[in-house]
Structures are given as structure tokens and as C-alpha cells.
Length: 426
Ligand code: DOR
Ligand code: ZN
Image (cartoon, rainbow, N blue to C red; front, side):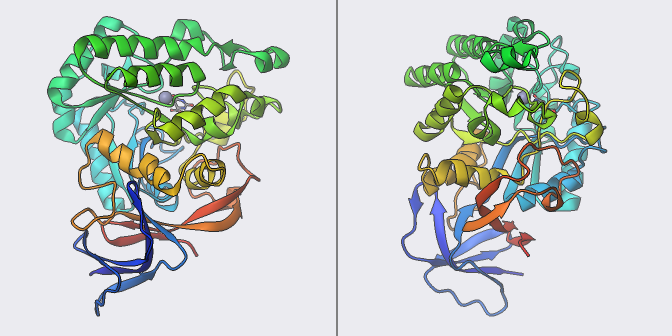
């Protein structure tokens, strides 16, 4: 069955089309873009007054399957992704067991295909069991369907092991994604070290914990002439270092999360455990630097770090509550409200940071733009829609977000995956 999108105001990373177009999708591919297309047997979606972007790609989420299906499953995570406008998500390996062998990768891909709401690409671990001791079999993971590896949740602290991982990953053509945190500097700090942590009397970790590992990785990739992708950047110093490395031609890419460009550590003033996240919320100066980094492209893409946790995991004191917040369903609204509406990003830059750049970084050559011949993954956004984040609205299995009650502008109206409508706002 073909799908015809009428009156589309197309926003690609390189161009916001002045005139509306029709987009015809057949067999999962965009086959024709023209001012007025007739297709008698096609299902029609009217995109009048909407913005039509390439399907959004989130290269950092936690799906929790296998092993923690009480928090999220491939099915509920896919529902949440489709509602949030994401046609591709990459899920981190800190599951139980850890995603460090082909069987688990294949299982997740198979289940995601059965569900059919979003394209799920598992990220394998760098070290077996994420234990920072022994490398995984990279070719096995690559053949099973991984495009990237990460020990997310922690760094590969052993520099010699990281050196070997970078060398093998280069040979296997796999991207390494580093969660940058020196565990000895972080200690048992649960929030950013600074004025707020002192006032609240909470254990804290210094921003240095993040920048030390980023600087080490830059030295490693410079020495080895290879590349790395830095997960969830949160501090000004990191943005400055990455900007400098890029200016030297070093092959570093990086991402940032909506909560890190929206909230500061003062979100913990009321001891709301939903604001406990790792890396932690930082200072107003850091938030400004993240926005600046996203604006000038030092930070290549926006990811959610969607981290579902149950009420039981969160209804504890701050020391014991789990780290992380959900994010798939609030990412578009927060990005439009905090970045596009405030003139930090243009619409084309939003398409770049949320679709085109991740496609480029991961190497998905058929995704990331709306052009004839590309996959028919398309996100239709109502840019003017005002709404408030409520628990009832969330379809993720977990409800842990500090954003309830926040008013947003801009919402996903329709999500199209390989030419099929997988989400439509009612
Ligand atoms: O806040 C976080 N939650 N940070 C991480 O690195 C891991 C994640 C999780 O898995 O819950
Ligand atoms: Zn992480």
C-alpha cells in the first residue's frame, strides 16, 4: 500500500522548502516529491500547517530488555519512541544480561521487528559484562547487527583496554560511544559538585570527572588516528575541549540531552529524585554552553538518554534512588520550546541535530533526509501546538520525569516508519 503526504512543508537539514510539496511513499521508500501528486489507491495524510522532517533518530536510549522488563520492554519503548517522533532508536547494553553477544542483539532486533513501531539498533558493550576487563568479540556483534559499542553507565576506565578497543573498532568499522566519567573522581557523588550541593548537603561529583575522560579519549584518538563519539555532554569545559579538538581535525562527535539544556542542579532543591541523573544536572553556565555547542555544531546531535525506572526505584532518598529519567516523549517539545522558540536553533538545525547528524554518525545512508530514494521514515510536527506534560499522556512503561506540569510548544502529530503510519495524535 502506498502513502501520500499532502501539503508538506519539508524541513531537511540543508533546506526548509518555501513551497509545500506532496510526498509519495511506496514499498518503504520515498519515490516522488512534487508540488501536486495524484495517487488513487494511496492512503493520504494531510500535513497542512505542519512541519515535515526526516524521521527522528535517537542514538542513546535504554530499552531495559532483556532482564528489566518491569521498567520497559522493546514493545513499550517502541510505543514511546513512535509517540515521540523517533523512527530509529539505538538502545544501550546495560541490560541483564549485558548486550555483549550476538544472541542478545538478534533477540532485540527480532522483537523490535515483531512490534514494528520503530527501527531498533542495539548497541553492544565494549567490554564483556561491561566489567572493564576483557573486550567483546566485535566482529560477532557487528555481524549480528550492531553499528556501535558502548559501556554506557560507565567509562572504559582502563586506558590500555580503551586503546585496544579503539584499534579493533576501527578495523571492525564500529563506532565507540563513551560515557565519560572517572569513577574515582565521582566517588559516591550523586549530583554536581558546587554551590547547590553544598547548600543541600548532598554528596557530589566534580565536573572534572567528565572532562578528564573526554580529554583522555581525545588523546587516544589523536594518537591512533581514529574516532570516538562522546555521550551526553553536560559541562562548559567539555564543550570547549571538543570544540578545540574539532578545530584540530580530530574525529570526535558528541551529543547532548534535553534535560541538560533545560534544567540546572537547582532542580534538586525539592529533593525530587526524578531529577537525579548521571551525568548530573549542572550549573546555568553549563546549560548556556550546551546550547551554544548545539548551536555552533560542536555538539552534533540531541539524544534523550531515555532511562526508565519504576516508582520503587525512585521513591527512595536521593542517595539510593536510581539515576535517570525517561525522555522519548518530551524531547521534541523541549527542543522546540527551549531551542527553536528561543532562537538557539533554526528548524533546519533541529532536523540536523535530531535526524541528519545521527544518521551520518552511525552510517545510516538511507536515513536522515527527505529525498527521493531515501527510506520513508518521516516525522510530522505541529509546531504551534501548546501542551502540558502529564503522567496520563506517557505511554512508556515508566513514568519517571521531573517535567510534569511543564508547558511546551510543539508536538509530534504523526510518525511514519517505512511508509506506514505508526503514530497519529488523536
Ligand atoms: O542516568 C542514567 N541512567 N545514566 C546512565 O548512565 C545510565 C542510565 C540508566 O541506565 O538508568
Ligand atoms: Zn550514560
